[in-house]
Length: 255
Image (tube, rainbow, N blue to C red; front, top):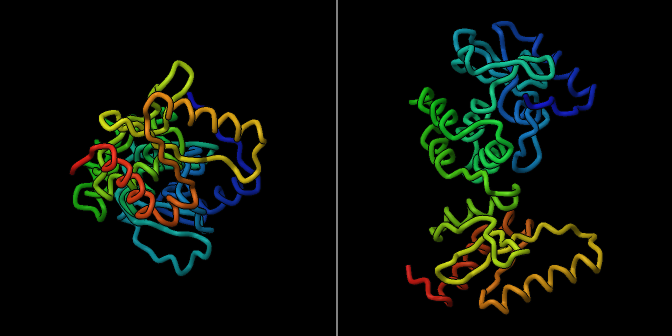
């Protein structure tokens, strides 16, 4: 059983209070549920507490400042208790976020949930099938089918999404290059390695030196290495995808 995430007591109290402000058995959902489940999301969460109330309990958010109220079917199988508050299950949380956000944001959430083994792809696809006809279901299904637990971080997830959205071939993730070195991304047919640079602003000279030596080992083995940063792929995913595409073409990619 996964242990509850350590949350700020005031924040948890705020969420619990928000639940009591609505009738109709609401459950914490969407971004707020992702926080309770310790699933990464893309960007900063909005300040409102997200709740889902069963569709039969119609209402308005105007009387609930600070709340974002969603009205949707909420079977008992798709709700549970976490940190002593009712919350949507992991699979339902991922499905809701994949339906209501852009593709790359959904990939971050789905990859994170699969990586932490909080749910599996089949359970996610089952819930999405139950949501047939809801807005965003097609995108949610694409996210679920594309999600990969081997994606090691949100940075790698949005990088993968950028490649897919720009038609690049799908790379291998966490690919072994030497007995000690793994590449974030590998296009083995073209001997191209992609490295998503998650190094922070303040790194030691030793870390920089080790990264330089690692890249040199890749080059010595005949791999072309292309790098990008979080800032680049977050703000200019098209530019990063184009850079990778240029390297792939230089190494024989012809599509």
